[in-house]
Structure formats: structure tokens, C-alpha cells
Length: 579
Image (cartoon, rainbow, N blue to C red; front, side, top):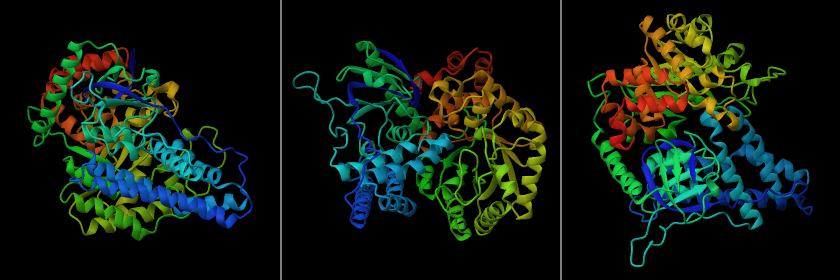
């Protein structure tokens, strides 16, 4: 078998396949309890508390590196598990469960249905937020398993038996439809050689944890669970190729490349920019204070995207100004003297908020009132956020930059810049997420201090392809030459106005594509923290001219696969480094 998915953690790994296909069944829709609503509510909430306690316990083990069962993901894994524990104890979720039980619904079905509301919000958001659906599903399934006694699918905590008598145990390749952080966060390279999932994307927790572990991973790999159990599988986390027909020579070559990749990451730890000294700040994407430790540990030079919507989602009222101020100040304090880019609330349309009235019927929510369009209608929400940001910045030395989402015109850019300056915020920018903004980037840049390209939405709108539809995944490939053309237009427009232009979409997490983006004129790159070392290594081995050659080769290609191959041909060190 030869399969292809999205490579999200570079390098190559091989071993016997362990196929994880079991799941917790959905409780029947007509499930009803016996009549004691109070007892049924307590049963449901107790199950959620038990799940939260178990997740917290696993997180605590990850905080103890001396624990033999602590795993290799460290703080990244602990933060993810603690975020899941918070999901389990969310007060709004408890209210939803209790209301359903009062209607006669049995505890397992009440838990399932209460999670559905949150799940729909995240799934509709897409991108980084959409990837959190898998985390919600895992918490839900764990609670239902507690309530029903159904066993949860288990991940082996030991390597596979040796291939020959007396041989050494072998790390296995873990293959699943999707993987739960609670299981995979505790694994290590000694146990798992690679991850392969049929679902997920670059910002899924499978991808994030794999990069933290330094384990190759391929996600979105259709048909992966049909791999025969025990078959030797070779996984290329750079190209996305998954093979069961690799020769002994192929496996030996993969091991050599993997050693080279790890050495390159270690060697590049102190480098900045390209080999010939062209500076390229490498920044971290964060969703809140819980992501700061990972950003610092992986050498982030600042924050390129603070997704503030995490503070607002799932609430019946907007978070108090004091709570917002604390969250923003934490990020600023973590990077004294460095840049911290905060995105104003990106909500509306496919990310509705309970405390904002719906805009009315929107036949196509992706084209509706979202981002700045919504903030202009609810100016008090924006003013409160900008005020909290200004107060947080007043006592810190970090350079705060605030940007607006979903900006299409120069008039919108000027309006947002004026709103920021009225609050004393000196640096205002806008995101380039729609083709109109890329086409007229010079006009937008003249009104603000910087541009930042969001590749996920830019691809969605450029190709009229909903990023939540797996059948249109090819059109969401960041290697699409037309998307690279738009990136080039945006970067050139910013340069014409003497403004910087970064990329904060997860496309920057691919070492090869990072070089291409720099070659297109992008001035900074922001990504999940765990991707920073590999990108730093790839950039540090190539000159700016090589990056430019790779960019032009990719743009001249006819499709994403051809663009990737053409670019990598201009970046010879990537293969040598196993990236």
C-alpha cells in the first residue's frame, strides 16, 4: 500500500502498524432516565469531574520529567490535557447537561447532546479552532465511557515485540482515525515511531504533540486504518507518504535522514534567518497564556498571532475587561522588548457568540458578518478589547501590535487604525485573508503599520472552497500556485508602502514552504511553537537567493504537488537534513 496525507511533523519513521479503530458508541437518542432527575444529574456531573481529574493527573505526570511514564511532550502535552480538563468542568456545559436531564434525558445522552452545541461552534470556526473538535469529542467519549462502562480504546504504552528472537523491541507506527491527546501525550519515541491519522490537520493536537516529541506524523491520510495490523510501515512526515512496501535499503535511508534532521534542529538552535544573514523573525501562534511556555521553550522571538477568540467562545457574556487585561499582559510580559501581535476578536458568521445578537439569516455564513465587519456593528465590544490591550501594554516593554481580521478595503483598514490610535495603541495592522486585500495590499498597507497573511482563509476565499469540506482538501493546499501568487502580491504591496508583511497561517510550519514564503517577500513567519526548530533549521541552511529561486519555481508550477517538488529541488539542504 502507498498512501498520501499531509505531512505535519518532518522526518521519517518506520515500524509495525498498530491500528486503533475502536470507539465509544453514541448513546441512543431516545435514552431516558428512571425518574430521579437529581440523582441522574449528579451521575453525569460526577463522570465529568472524574474525566477532568484523570486528565489533570496525566498532565501532572508530564510536569515530572523524572517520572518514567511522563512521556516526551513535556509542557505542550500538559497544557493540552489541562485545557481538556477545563472543557470537562465548563459551567455552561454543566448547565446544559442538567437542563437535558430535567427534560427526562438519561445522563449519557445528556452529556452527548450538551457537547454538541460547543462542537458545532468549533467545527464552524474551522482552522485552529476547528481542530479542537477532536479534543471535545475525546472528553465527551471519556465521560460517556464512565457512565456506560464501555471500555475506551487503548494505546500500547510499550514498544512492539522484537521481529526476531532475542532482538530489541521496536517502536510501532500508531494508525487511527484520530488520536486523543490524553493517550498520545504520554508516549515517547521509544514507544512510537510515527503517527498516521485519517483525520486532522496541521493544527490538530496529533500534529502539535508529534512535533513536540520529534516524531514524524501524517494526518488526513484516507484509508490509513485499512493498513494490515503488524505490517511494517514507513512514514515520511515531510512528504506525507505512507508506505508498506519499503525495502531494507529504504528503511536504512529513513533512519539516516532522521538522525540528520535531529542534528540539524540542535545545530540551528542559535541561528536567526537565512544562511547569508537575511533576518526572518520566527514567531509563535498562541491561543492564550497557556501556550506561552511552549513558545519560549522552542525559541519564539515573539508572538505573531494571539487568537483572542478563545477568551470569548462559549460564554453567555463577554469576558470582563479585567480578565482580558490579565490574559494580554501575560503574553506581553513573556516577551519583553519583543513583538506581540494580537488579533482583535474574530467572531461572527461561522463563529457566533451567545452575547451578540445574530445578524439575521445568512445563506452563506463564510461570506457574512465576521471579524471587523461585526466589530464595527458592535463597537462597544471592540472598544472594551482595545482598552484592555492598551492598559496591559502600559506597564510592559513588549511592542504590542493589534490587527483586524477579515479586512477587504483600504477604508476598513483606515477605520480600524483610527480606532486603535484613539485608544493610544501605536501599531495597528490588518490581516490579508480575502483576495481583495491581497490585490490592493499597497492601498491597505498605506493606512496601517503592517500586514499579516492568514493562509487558511485566503485559500478558502481564493478557491471558493469551504475549508471544512474534506472533499475540497486539495484546494486548501497551501502549495497551490495561485495562493502563492496572492502571497507575493500582498508582500509586494506591503513593500511598496514600506510596511512589513508576515504570514501567521500554519503554512509557515512547513520548512520548505517557509523558505518559499521568505522568497516571496514575507518578512516574518508565525506558527505553532513546536514547528519553530525545524523551520529555523531549514531557513538557516539556505540563502535568500535560494529561497527566491524556490518561490519562483513553485509559482511556475501547475499544481501543489508540482510546486512542492519544484521548490524542494531548489532547496537541497532540506533532504540532507531530513526536513
